[in-house]
Image 1 (cartoon, rainbow, N blue to C red):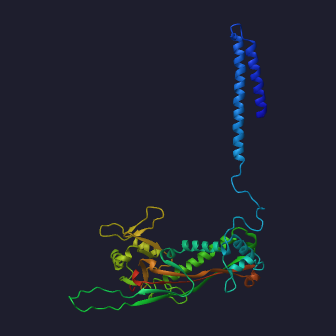
Image 2: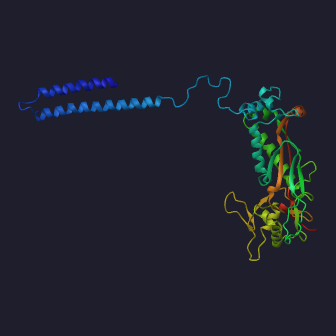
Image 3: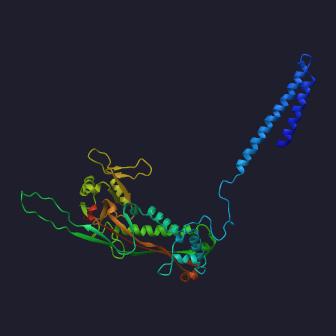
Length: 397
């Protein structure tokens, strides 16, 4: 029943109630008990109809409120000409990412104008910005050293100035001659060494796997690049690759040489305090898992293990209170070789030159029904202050 009908029904009921009241009053103007009950029921009907009308009015008010638009109405056909939510441009746009997948599936035959924004000097196409960011994520996960070192992006040969000597104060007599020291400076140059990784995927994987192809390529490239980087950052000799912290020349300073390959608690303490106090504030260990297994058995003079396991998720294990990082590429405990490093590894600078790019190699594996992809990057790394990292070496056998 509509509000109008309810109002009309209420008016009719009220007129009937008033008429009944006037016609059934006695000589003294009072209703009999029976007539009073009838009138009360008629009056209650009017009251109930009034409540129903008010309820209907509230219902209409709520409907009006909910029917109002909560956002800006569309003034054009959705999706006409562009993606409404794609506000990014260049290699960061969703269109660039989608077109990159398209050209990879079509053998770089169907190339859109969007990809021209990311051409590489060597003929390839720069990976979308989202891919590049996710590559960094994988590298960070696989490569413990990137989280400890200082990473910078270079556009050319990058020079780092190093203060060789610092002025020293000296006491002089009243009126005595001043003494001057020579301030010397050195430079470390970060160049760019080329690192690449190539993978082959079947044509079935390329054309049939519509959703996991991107993840597959990124994961495989990221793991391979991360492993190669970490090996170079730790053991590289600087020839065609970064100079590692364990390098004989240009790496950390040798502070402890063991007697053979026997490692003791005192050797650990000597290594810790060979590092100057300012560097110890942010110092940590880098070593091989096999070496850590040996250290876990060592005890101090009180019989307590010097290795302290982590009791909280996300917190690293510790040796004598200092964080421990293990890497499969850290040297094993072998005669005449480095054993571990202790220091502030933020003084190792990693220079990323430009961004990564990917190329397709279709003809090379065409006979095997496979397609090759190559990812490339240019990176260098050097320890700018050798005294910031102290090395323990094993003695002769």
